Image (tube, rainbow, N blue to C red; front, side, top):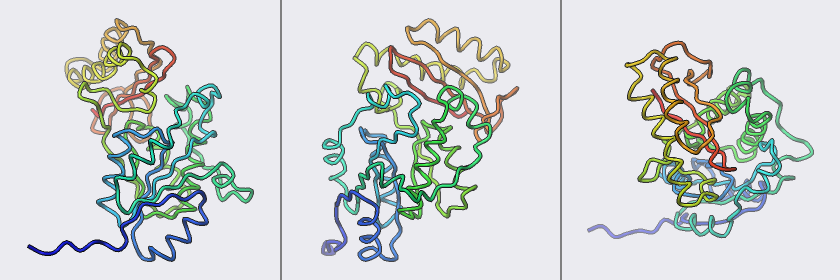
Length: 287
């Protein structure tokens, strides 16, 4: 049996601004590949799955924890967003070659801000763009600046936020940034509920009620050849409305343009948003 040789670079460190992080990457990690996992904290297994994938595919992983005020069009929602930094750091400490960056707002949006606004087109007008005005402008801005300051080789995003991933792809192309974007499968609990930081606000009864979301999406997928697209949506919505949740939207769209579709094709995705009490949840399923 070969002896186990510890890697000299194994480390877990926390940085509070980009200048220290960049200096460390330049001096200690020169030539190594960097995987970036941007988060707003309140970490769960979905986030950790991104870190695990990034860990396998890169020499070092940078995890950012920053609750981005620019992507909240509702200030009450911003104030209520869970902040669990000590728990987050404890979860991440299990990994080697992971660096944590917890910048403040001034560091992310400096006086000489490098971001030049991009045209998100229809993505800013439909579904999440329609119901959360300004949200995607804030997402594009913060992700651009993370890419600019950290200069990762790859960046990892969960596909539960499918429209967000399309926004980031568009921003990256328009900004001519040389970052490989990696979309990662949605992580669900054993009942099928998509993991979300917002689930922390739900009690056991509400967590059970929210299963109507994945059940409705599965209905769409399983019956897509049985009905035309109008009938399919009508039946799915009728099923959903038997639950106590309030449906905000259920749409079948193209996975790149997010235009509504008249028929389901290979690039179709069904997206849904709903409220369980005051908690807003989103999910999707590829068709």
